[in-house]
Length: 196
Image 1 (cartoon, rainbow, N blue to C red):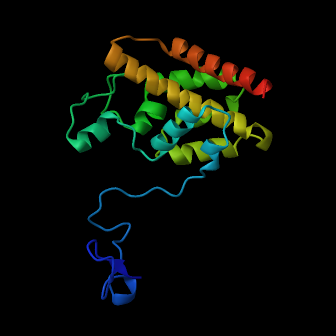
Image 2: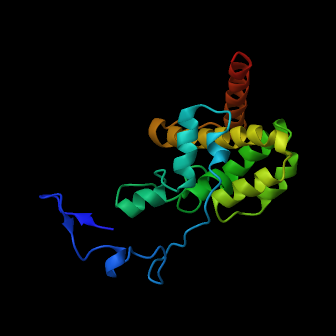
Image 3: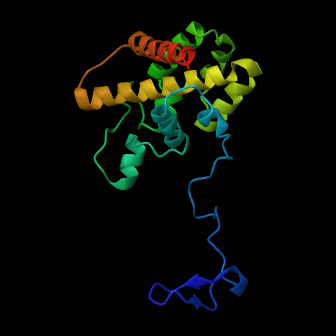
């Protein structure tokens, strides 16, 4: 592999993997964050939801949404605790799955959408959104997986919107109200797909 200098666009000898220079390792002892295993992207991209929600879900599973923890990493102003439960510093995992508010919303949605086999999975705090999602999908019949992925994405999306409503608009909705919004999103999408 050759690299090119910006000025001349000519190969620069002595640089690249063939010359003994390797790209940086993915994980070193000094790196404090351990990378999670690769994610099955079809869970997002083949779900029956709007593209804006798919893009949000993709950013979420990459842990790049601007939660308090990610704002803190950048040195930007942020809330010191979760705005939903006044608990620990907000992370994507806490906000979407571990927060008591999120758990109440999930419990309601999973019950309404007849995914009751997944309600027990929420009682144990997961370590990654990706692994929780993949485990959830494995527990439902293949014919229901695309629908489950839509429910998961709409739930994440509406919990995020409620978080933003609380921070930016100073408005608060209850768990059942957020669950009703998710249910409405699911039914609107279902009606839209009937006409396609």
